[in-house]
Image (cartoon, rainbow, N blue to C red):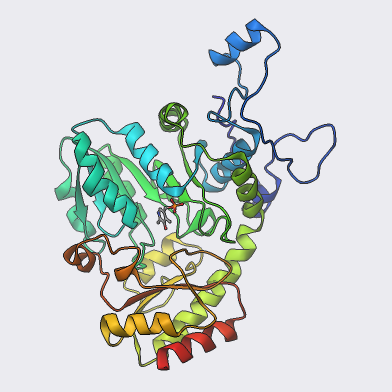
Length: 396
Ligand SMILES: *Cc1c(COP(=O)(O)O)cnc(C)c1O
Protein backbone atom coordinates (compact mmCIF):
# COMPACT_ATOMS: atom_id res chain seq x y z
CA UNK A 1 0.00 0.00 0.00
CA UNK A 2 1.13 3.51 -0.67
CA UNK A 3 0.51 4.79 2.83
CA UNK A 4 3.56 3.36 4.48
CA UNK A 5 6.19 0.84 3.54
CA UNK A 6 6.24 -0.34 7.17
CA UNK A 7 8.96 -2.72 8.17
CA UNK A 8 9.87 -4.32 11.46
CA UNK A 9 13.19 -3.04 12.70
CA UNK A 10 15.48 -5.44 14.48
CA UNK A 11 17.60 -2.84 16.28
CA UNK A 12 17.08 -1.34 19.72
CA UNK A 13 14.29 1.19 20.14
CA UNK A 14 16.73 4.09 20.74
CA UNK A 15 18.23 3.41 17.33
CA UNK A 16 14.92 2.73 15.58
CA UNK A 17 13.54 6.05 16.83
CA UNK A 18 16.49 7.91 15.37
CA UNK A 19 17.56 5.96 12.31
CA UNK A 20 14.27 4.94 10.67
CA UNK A 21 14.17 7.43 7.83
CA UNK A 22 12.87 8.35 4.42
CA UNK A 23 15.35 8.47 1.55
CA UNK A 24 17.57 11.51 1.34
CA UNK A 25 17.70 13.70 -1.80
CA UNK A 26 20.71 14.58 -3.97
CA UNK A 27 21.58 17.23 -1.33
CA UNK A 28 22.43 14.47 1.18
CA UNK A 29 20.59 16.12 4.09
CA UNK A 30 21.53 14.66 7.45
CA UNK A 31 18.20 15.62 9.01
CA UNK A 32 14.96 14.73 7.20
CA UNK A 33 13.93 17.22 4.51
CA UNK A 34 10.39 18.64 4.71
CA UNK A 35 8.11 17.71 1.80
CA UNK A 36 5.48 20.42 1.67
CA UNK A 37 3.59 19.22 -1.36
CA UNK A 38 -0.08 18.43 -1.76
CA UNK A 39 0.41 16.21 -4.82
CA UNK A 40 2.96 14.35 -6.94
CA UNK A 41 3.57 14.13 -10.72
CA UNK A 42 3.65 11.12 -13.02
CA UNK A 43 5.94 10.07 -15.88
CA UNK A 44 3.12 9.31 -18.32
CA UNK A 45 -0.43 7.99 -18.57
CA UNK A 46 0.66 4.43 -17.85
CA UNK A 47 2.57 5.50 -14.71
CA UNK A 48 -0.54 7.32 -13.55
CA UNK A 49 -2.82 4.33 -14.21
CA UNK A 50 -0.47 1.90 -12.46
CA UNK A 51 -0.14 4.21 -9.46
CA UNK A 52 -3.88 4.72 -9.03
CA UNK A 53 -4.53 0.99 -9.38
CA UNK A 54 -1.91 0.43 -6.65
CA UNK A 55 0.22 -1.79 -8.88
CA UNK A 56 2.93 0.70 -7.96
CA UNK A 57 3.66 1.83 -4.42
CA UNK A 58 4.17 5.56 -4.59
CA UNK A 59 2.88 8.91 -3.39
CA UNK A 60 -0.15 10.22 -5.30
CA UNK A 61 -1.70 12.89 -3.11
CA UNK A 62 -0.83 13.94 0.45
CA UNK A 63 -4.28 13.01 1.77
CA UNK A 64 -3.19 9.44 0.98
CA UNK A 65 0.50 9.58 1.82
CA UNK A 66 3.50 11.91 2.05
CA UNK A 67 7.18 11.09 2.68
CA UNK A 68 7.26 12.89 6.04
CA UNK A 69 4.07 11.19 7.19
CA UNK A 70 5.42 7.81 6.04
CA UNK A 71 8.61 8.29 8.04
CA UNK A 72 6.64 9.12 11.18
CA UNK A 73 4.35 6.11 10.70
CA UNK A 74 7.20 3.74 9.97
CA UNK A 75 9.04 4.80 13.15
CA UNK A 76 6.00 4.47 15.42
CA UNK A 77 5.02 1.14 13.87
CA UNK A 78 8.53 -0.22 14.38
CA UNK A 79 8.61 1.03 17.99
CA UNK A 80 5.22 -0.58 18.74
CA UNK A 81 6.06 -3.84 16.97
CA UNK A 82 3.25 -3.23 14.45
CA UNK A 83 3.26 -3.95 10.72
CA UNK A 84 2.09 -0.53 9.59
CA UNK A 85 -0.14 2.44 10.40
CA UNK A 86 -1.89 5.62 9.33
CA UNK A 87 -1.28 9.11 10.76
CA UNK A 88 -4.00 11.59 11.63
CA UNK A 89 -4.36 15.34 12.23
CA UNK A 90 -5.21 14.77 15.91
CA UNK A 91 -5.53 11.97 18.44
CA UNK A 92 -9.31 12.25 18.26
CA UNK A 93 -9.36 11.88 14.48
CA UNK A 94 -7.30 8.71 15.00
CA UNK A 95 -9.83 7.39 17.54
CA UNK A 96 -12.86 8.35 15.44
CA UNK A 97 -11.55 7.20 12.06
CA UNK A 98 -10.22 3.90 13.42
CA UNK A 99 -13.57 3.02 14.98
CA UNK A 100 -15.71 4.39 12.15
CA UNK A 101 -13.69 2.48 9.55
CA UNK A 102 -14.24 -0.84 11.34
CA UNK A 103 -17.77 -0.55 12.75
CA UNK A 104 -21.11 -1.10 11.02
CA UNK A 105 -24.58 -0.07 12.10
CA UNK A 106 -25.75 -2.53 14.75
CA UNK A 107 -22.27 -3.22 16.13
CA UNK A 108 -21.45 -2.97 19.82
CA UNK A 109 -18.33 -1.79 21.68
CA UNK A 110 -17.20 -2.94 25.12
CA UNK A 111 -15.03 -0.23 26.66
CA UNK A 112 -13.43 0.72 29.93
CA UNK A 113 -15.43 3.49 31.59
CA UNK A 114 -12.34 5.62 32.26
CA UNK A 115 -11.53 7.00 28.84
CA UNK A 116 -10.63 10.34 27.31
CA UNK A 117 -13.57 12.79 27.54
CA UNK A 118 -14.05 13.16 23.77
CA UNK A 119 -13.93 9.37 23.24
CA UNK A 120 -16.70 9.11 25.82
CA UNK A 121 -18.70 11.72 23.84
CA UNK A 122 -18.15 9.69 20.67
CA UNK A 123 -19.57 6.57 22.34
CA UNK A 124 -22.48 8.24 24.11
CA UNK A 125 -23.55 11.09 21.75
CA UNK A 126 -22.46 10.35 18.21
CA UNK A 127 -22.21 6.59 17.66
CA UNK A 128 -25.85 6.04 18.75
CA UNK A 129 -26.82 8.16 15.69
CA UNK A 130 -25.44 5.31 13.56
CA UNK A 131 -26.91 2.60 15.77
CA UNK A 132 -23.56 1.71 17.32
CA UNK A 133 -23.91 0.96 21.02
CA UNK A 134 -21.48 0.45 23.88
CA UNK A 135 -21.21 -1.04 27.37
CA UNK A 136 -18.73 0.19 29.96
CA UNK A 137 -16.80 -1.83 32.50
CA UNK A 138 -15.17 -0.31 35.58
CA UNK A 139 -11.40 -0.52 35.45
CA UNK A 140 -11.22 -2.44 38.73
CA UNK A 141 -13.88 -4.93 37.57
CA UNK A 142 -12.15 -6.61 34.68
CA UNK A 143 -13.97 -9.83 35.65
CA UNK A 144 -17.20 -8.27 34.38
CA UNK A 145 -15.91 -7.75 30.82
CA UNK A 146 -16.98 -11.14 29.47
CA UNK A 147 -20.54 -10.72 30.79
CA UNK A 148 -20.90 -7.53 28.68
CA UNK A 149 -19.99 -9.21 25.40
CA UNK A 150 -22.95 -9.77 23.03
CA UNK A 151 -23.14 -11.49 19.63
CA UNK A 152 -22.91 -8.05 17.97
CA UNK A 153 -19.83 -6.94 19.97
CA UNK A 154 -16.97 -6.19 17.61
CA UNK A 155 -14.49 -4.06 19.52
CA UNK A 156 -12.93 -4.11 22.98
CA UNK A 157 -11.52 -0.66 23.82
CA UNK A 158 -9.41 0.67 26.71
CA UNK A 159 -6.73 3.12 27.78
CA UNK A 160 -4.01 2.28 30.28
CA UNK A 161 -2.94 4.21 32.27
CA UNK A 162 -6.34 5.90 32.25
CA UNK A 163 -7.05 9.59 31.98
CA UNK A 164 -7.33 11.27 34.44
CA UNK A 165 -7.49 8.64 37.22
CA UNK A 166 -4.18 6.92 36.35
CA UNK A 167 -5.72 3.48 36.80
CA UNK A 168 -4.03 0.48 35.20
CA UNK A 169 -5.87 -2.16 33.20
CA UNK A 170 -4.35 -5.61 32.70
CA UNK A 171 -3.64 -5.66 28.96
CA UNK A 172 -2.73 -9.33 28.91
CA UNK A 173 -6.15 -10.16 30.38
CA UNK A 174 -7.91 -7.96 27.81
CA UNK A 175 -5.86 -9.64 25.08
CA UNK A 176 -6.97 -13.06 26.29
CA UNK A 177 -10.66 -12.01 26.36
CA UNK A 178 -10.46 -10.41 22.91
CA UNK A 179 -8.90 -13.51 21.43
CA UNK A 180 -11.40 -15.88 23.05
CA UNK A 181 -14.40 -13.86 21.77
CA UNK A 182 -12.88 -12.87 18.44
CA UNK A 183 -12.99 -9.12 19.20
CA UNK A 184 -10.70 -6.42 17.87
CA UNK A 185 -8.75 -5.09 20.87
CA UNK A 186 -7.91 -1.40 20.54
CA UNK A 187 -5.68 0.31 23.11
CA UNK A 188 -5.28 4.09 23.37
CA UNK A 189 -1.62 4.07 24.46
CA UNK A 190 -1.30 7.84 24.80
CA UNK A 191 -0.17 8.00 28.44
CA UNK A 192 2.47 5.29 27.99
CA UNK A 193 3.97 6.12 24.56
CA UNK A 194 5.62 3.35 22.50
CA UNK A 195 8.60 3.49 24.87
CA UNK A 196 6.87 2.53 28.12
CA UNK A 197 4.33 0.00 26.88
CA UNK A 198 3.68 -2.02 23.70
CA UNK A 199 0.08 -3.34 23.83
CA UNK A 200 0.53 -5.53 20.72
CA UNK A 201 2.81 -7.75 22.83
CA UNK A 202 -0.19 -8.40 25.11
CA UNK A 203 -2.63 -9.16 22.31
CA UNK A 204 -3.87 -5.75 21.12
CA UNK A 205 -4.80 -5.58 17.44
CA UNK A 206 -4.56 -1.81 17.10
CA UNK A 207 -2.73 0.84 19.12
CA UNK A 208 -3.76 4.50 18.99
CA UNK A 209 -1.72 7.50 20.08
CA UNK A 210 -2.48 11.14 20.48
CA UNK A 211 0.92 12.37 19.30
CA UNK A 212 -0.03 15.79 20.67
CA UNK A 213 1.03 14.72 24.13
CA UNK A 214 4.36 13.10 25.04
CA UNK A 215 5.31 12.22 21.46
CA UNK A 216 5.60 15.88 20.44
CA UNK A 217 6.39 16.52 24.07
CA UNK A 218 6.97 20.21 23.59
CA UNK A 219 3.42 21.48 23.22
CA UNK A 220 3.77 22.54 19.60
CA UNK A 221 1.60 20.46 17.27
CA UNK A 222 -1.45 18.20 17.18
CA UNK A 223 -1.27 14.73 15.71
CA UNK A 224 -2.48 11.16 16.02
CA UNK A 225 -1.61 7.74 14.73
CA UNK A 226 -3.01 4.21 14.63
CA UNK A 227 -0.75 1.19 14.14
CA UNK A 228 -1.47 -2.52 13.82
CA UNK A 229 -1.75 -5.36 11.36
CA UNK A 230 -1.65 -4.63 7.63
CA UNK A 231 -5.24 -5.94 7.11
CA UNK A 232 -6.87 -3.71 9.70
CA UNK A 233 -4.76 -0.70 8.76
CA UNK A 234 -5.75 -1.21 5.14
CA UNK A 235 -9.43 -0.69 6.07
CA UNK A 236 -8.56 2.35 8.18
CA UNK A 237 -6.37 3.73 5.40
CA UNK A 238 -9.10 3.39 2.73
CA UNK A 239 -11.68 5.02 5.01
CA UNK A 240 -9.28 7.84 5.87
CA UNK A 241 -8.04 8.53 2.36
CA UNK A 242 -11.69 9.13 1.41
CA UNK A 243 -12.73 11.08 4.49
CA UNK A 244 -9.63 13.25 4.89
CA UNK A 245 -8.29 13.32 8.48
CA UNK A 246 -4.63 13.13 7.31
CA UNK A 247 -1.74 14.50 9.37
CA UNK A 248 -0.03 17.52 7.76
CA UNK A 249 3.50 16.90 6.41
CA UNK A 250 4.85 19.71 8.59
CA UNK A 251 3.43 18.19 11.77
CA UNK A 252 4.66 14.76 10.68
CA UNK A 253 8.16 16.20 10.25
CA UNK A 254 8.01 17.71 13.78
CA UNK A 255 6.67 14.48 15.29
CA UNK A 256 9.20 12.27 13.57
CA UNK A 257 11.98 14.50 14.95
CA UNK A 258 10.32 14.36 18.38
CA UNK A 259 10.52 10.58 18.40
CA UNK A 260 14.31 10.86 18.20
CA UNK A 261 14.36 12.30 21.72
CA UNK A 262 11.30 10.49 23.15
CA UNK A 263 13.26 7.93 25.15
CA UNK A 264 15.64 10.34 26.88
CA UNK A 265 12.81 12.78 27.60
CA UNK A 266 10.65 10.01 29.05
CA UNK A 267 13.45 8.74 31.29
CA UNK A 268 13.59 12.16 32.98
CA UNK A 269 9.79 12.68 32.94
CA UNK A 270 9.33 9.37 34.76
CA UNK A 271 12.18 9.99 37.22
CA UNK A 272 10.69 13.39 38.13
CA UNK A 273 7.15 12.00 38.33
CA UNK A 274 8.11 9.23 40.75
CA UNK A 275 9.78 11.82 43.01
CA UNK A 276 6.72 14.10 42.88
CA UNK A 277 4.42 11.13 43.64
CA UNK A 278 6.57 10.15 46.62
CA UNK A 279 6.53 13.76 47.83
CA UNK A 280 2.71 13.98 47.52
CA UNK A 281 2.26 10.78 49.52
CA UNK A 282 3.91 12.54 52.45
CA UNK A 283 1.75 15.68 52.20
CA UNK A 284 -1.18 15.92 54.61
CA UNK A 285 -3.37 17.84 52.13
CA UNK A 286 -2.95 15.30 49.32
CA UNK A 287 -4.92 12.07 49.49
CA UNK A 288 -5.29 9.00 47.29
CA UNK A 289 -2.10 9.74 45.33
CA UNK A 290 -2.07 7.56 42.23
CA UNK A 291 1.05 6.84 40.21
CA UNK A 292 1.57 3.45 38.50
CA UNK A 293 5.02 2.83 40.00
CA UNK A 294 4.10 3.75 43.58
CA UNK A 295 3.85 0.59 45.66
CA UNK A 296 0.55 1.90 47.05
CA UNK A 297 -1.06 1.91 43.57
CA UNK A 298 -3.85 -0.73 43.57
CA UNK A 299 -2.55 -2.19 40.27
CA UNK A 300 1.16 -1.77 41.01
CA UNK A 301 2.01 -5.37 40.06
CA UNK A 302 0.16 -5.10 36.74
CA UNK A 303 1.86 -1.77 36.01
CA UNK A 304 5.27 -3.36 36.68
CA UNK A 305 4.38 -6.25 34.37
CA UNK A 306 3.30 -4.18 31.38
CA UNK A 307 5.13 -0.85 31.69
CA UNK A 308 8.82 -0.06 31.53
CA UNK A 309 8.49 3.05 33.74
CA UNK A 310 5.51 4.74 35.42
CA UNK A 311 4.91 7.62 32.99
CA UNK A 312 4.59 11.30 33.86
CA UNK A 313 0.97 11.62 35.01
CA UNK A 314 -0.07 11.63 38.67
CA UNK A 315 -3.54 12.07 40.07
CA UNK A 316 -4.46 12.89 43.65
CA UNK A 317 -7.29 14.35 45.67
CA UNK A 318 -7.00 17.56 47.57
CA UNK A 319 -8.45 17.49 51.03
CA UNK A 320 -11.45 19.83 50.90
CA UNK A 321 -13.00 18.83 47.57
CA UNK A 322 -13.97 21.16 44.73
CA UNK A 323 -13.11 24.44 46.42
CA UNK A 324 -9.72 23.21 47.62
CA UNK A 325 -9.01 21.75 44.16
CA UNK A 326 -9.72 25.06 42.45
CA UNK A 327 -7.70 26.94 45.07
CA UNK A 328 -4.71 24.68 44.48
CA UNK A 329 -4.92 25.34 40.74
CA UNK A 330 -5.08 29.10 41.43
CA UNK A 331 -2.05 28.94 43.73
CA UNK A 332 0.54 27.24 41.52
CA UNK A 333 3.22 29.65 40.33
CA UNK A 334 5.67 27.59 38.28
CA UNK A 335 3.34 24.87 36.98
CA UNK A 336 1.05 25.84 34.11
CA UNK A 337 -2.72 25.84 34.37
CA UNK A 338 -3.59 24.02 31.17
CA UNK A 339 -5.65 21.10 29.88
CA UNK A 340 -2.72 19.66 27.92
CA UNK A 341 -0.29 17.06 29.19
CA UNK A 342 3.02 15.51 28.28
CA UNK A 343 4.86 18.81 27.81
CA UNK A 344 8.38 19.77 29.00
CA UNK A 345 6.51 22.18 31.28
CA UNK A 346 4.72 20.79 34.32
CA UNK A 347 0.95 21.23 34.07
CA UNK A 348 -1.86 21.03 36.62
CA UNK A 349 -5.48 20.34 35.62
CA UNK A 350 -8.76 20.10 37.50
CA UNK A 351 -10.62 17.45 35.43
CA UNK A 352 -14.08 17.84 37.03
CA UNK A 353 -14.39 21.46 35.86
CA UNK A 354 -12.45 21.18 32.57
CA UNK A 355 -11.59 18.08 30.51
CA UNK A 356 -14.39 15.96 31.97
CA UNK A 357 -16.96 18.70 32.67
CA UNK A 358 -19.24 17.38 29.88
CA UNK A 359 -19.80 14.14 31.77
CA UNK A 360 -22.72 13.93 34.18
CA UNK A 361 -21.79 14.08 37.87
CA UNK A 362 -22.75 10.40 38.11
CA UNK A 363 -20.56 9.37 35.15
CA UNK A 364 -17.68 11.38 36.60
CA UNK A 365 -17.90 9.67 39.97
CA UNK A 366 -18.19 6.25 38.33
CA UNK A 367 -15.01 7.04 36.41
CA UNK A 368 -13.33 8.05 39.67
CA UNK A 369 -13.29 11.78 38.92
CA UNK A 370 -14.07 13.26 42.30
CA UNK A 371 -14.58 17.03 42.76
CA UNK A 372 -11.15 17.43 44.39
CA UNK A 373 -9.21 15.32 41.87
CA UNK A 374 -6.12 17.03 40.43
CA UNK A 375 -4.02 15.72 37.56
CA UNK A 376 -0.37 16.66 37.28
CA UNK A 377 1.64 16.21 34.13
CA UNK A 378 5.19 16.29 35.47
CA UNK A 379 7.60 18.15 33.19
CA UNK A 380 11.34 18.47 32.81
CA UNK A 381 12.02 21.46 35.06
CA UNK A 382 14.41 20.83 37.97
CA UNK A 383 12.72 18.43 40.39
CA UNK A 384 13.37 20.75 43.38
CA UNK A 385 11.56 23.61 41.64
CA UNK A 386 8.54 21.46 40.76
CA UNK A 387 8.20 20.13 44.30
CA UNK A 388 8.72 23.58 45.84
CA UNK A 389 5.84 24.97 43.77
CA UNK A 390 3.48 22.09 44.58
CA UNK A 391 4.33 22.35 48.26
CA UNK A 392 3.53 26.05 48.51
CA UNK A 393 0.31 25.63 46.46
CA UNK A 394 -0.86 22.74 48.67
CA UNK A 395 -0.22 24.67 51.84
CA UNK A 396 -1.19 28.21 50.79
C1 LIG B 1 -5.40 13.95 24.35
C2 LIG B 1 -5.89 12.58 24.25
C3 LIG B 1 -6.63 12.16 23.12
C4 LIG B 1 -6.99 13.09 22.01
O1 LIG B 1 -5.88 13.62 21.35
P1 LIG B 1 -5.91 15.03 20.55
O2 LIG B 1 -4.60 15.04 19.86
O3 LIG B 1 -6.08 16.11 21.57
O4 LIG B 1 -7.08 14.96 19.62
C5 LIG B 1 -7.03 10.84 23.08
N1 LIG B 1 -6.77 9.98 24.09
C6 LIG B 1 -6.08 10.35 25.18
C7 LIG B 1 -5.81 9.36 26.25
C8 LIG B 1 -5.62 11.66 25.30
O5 LIG B 1 -4.95 12.03 26.41
